[in-house]
Length: 116
Image (cartoon, rainbow, N blue to C red; front, side):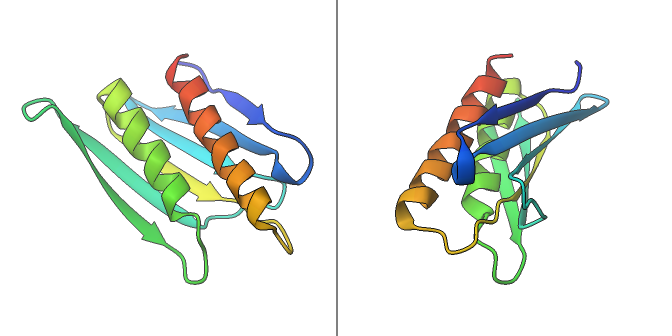
């Protein structure tokens, strides 16, 4: 499968998703213009149990764990293969409404990528 770059939103709430395949394993990154490594989630799929298991590591002071978790878990469950999701989104003086919009934009990108 080829590399993919998707974007959602505009202005301060615009986020991107990029993908890279390593063999049959998938790496996805969710980031904005001030992207960084905020959290990393790894999900693995058990065909025997029919479920995905996900672990997350979050850098001190970062709050990107829920985005990384959602991406790794949902894409692993859909694709039935290992997924590593790296999330790093930063916005100075962010408002609660912007957090909600960024979270929604990330969910939209994950759904869009899962349909490719």
